[in-house]
Image 1 (cartoon, rainbow, N blue to C red):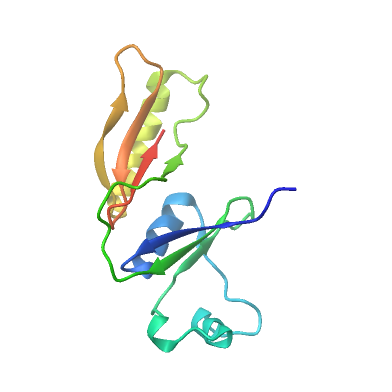
Image 2 (tube, one colour):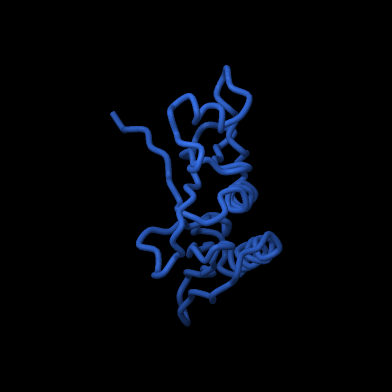
Length: 147
């Protein structure tokens, strides 16, 4: 039986990244557990020290329950090297769709995410290839691709 997991992304500003990735993935800010007014109340109940609590959102979830929960963990150190793990956002459609159609969809999604604070790092394609993707970075520099 598969195990359940959450994805954890270290960051400086959990609220900013939670809101960015919720909009990017069609997720929602994770609902507070039953019996608690806020996530910080829940964390306090678990014994998390006050100095480790952050203001704002720090969790997102798939409203349909299909994708993993994502927790944005505040850390003091800045990102220094390329991610060893990254997300691929599938916006282009099926691999059987014409490459021109997929390219238009990928470029439109890249433009939308730039409007949310992402940065385009470059197109990922080869002459004569039926693959097209756009490399990007989220507002804190974490790499991801749209294909």
